[in-house]
Image (cartoon, rainbow, N blue to C red; front, top):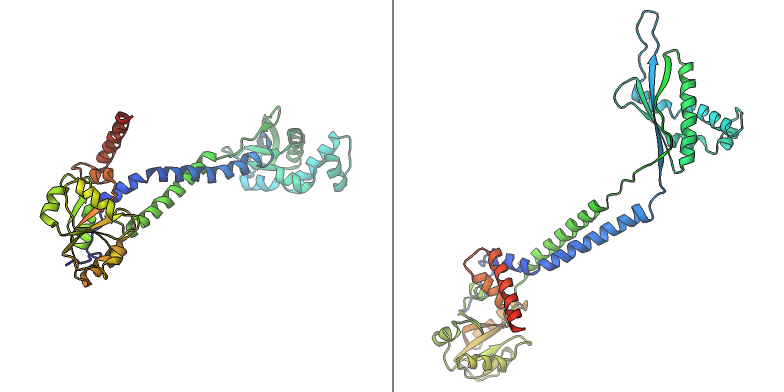
Length: 369
């Protein structure tokens, strides 16, 4: 009497790992696809169709603070103050004035200043930045635009504006230039194509592994004889190439047994012929749908197609056999993956077994050719 033990069937980790190794090319392809799908668009957005090139001019100023009547220096301007000042009207108006003078202008009207300078006050604020890297006396200004000539024009005007500002402030005694660029330098774009590709690889590979894990766990197909025996409690002879097939058939299958098939892809006549070549005699062939109308038989040898996702169909077929009084004495795994079974049954680490099976398979193919 057969019984279904889905609930008691343990997760076969060895078989799961072997099946993952068989699908390793799929995981690799998914990783490469992820690199292409994520890295490709990132490269197009950031490089091919990315923003215009930026040019910057960095200038370092040394600020000498004035001494008060009591002999103490005035409190220095901190970084936040300089960052705010550089974009305020006190600086932008001076820069526009000096830029317009360079162009032969010379007016105090803001609109005319902007027109003569070729840049608006709002744009100028976006181009300017000031910070203090370490020493509180050293102010570093940066001018960044998409035009190297415009960058240098603003930088030259900024130097004059800084000198004017220092002369107007009682807290500042002198402003000196420590470093002045000769020309604008190209800003290196922050392109992280490699990271984008690696992100795509990891995400796509992880999703593929997760999908395969769910697929393998929910897959009710039979891939090795041991799974069938644990699940249905019926002894299995192995595959048609198993060396112990004849001996087990002699003990478990009588000559009156019929070859029973369920899967449409399995030809019972072909199974019977293959068994006969291995010295296993049977009384005929029978399909599951023919059981109710067939004459009563003593026992049956159930031929199950390997990896056909047919677990529930097997359960239904065995239940029909029980109701019709047909005893299934043994089973045969048809069209099984012999390499997978040998790797599973080898008494060594699963990774070593799979690697050796692949090498041996390659040698056999070479010898055949």
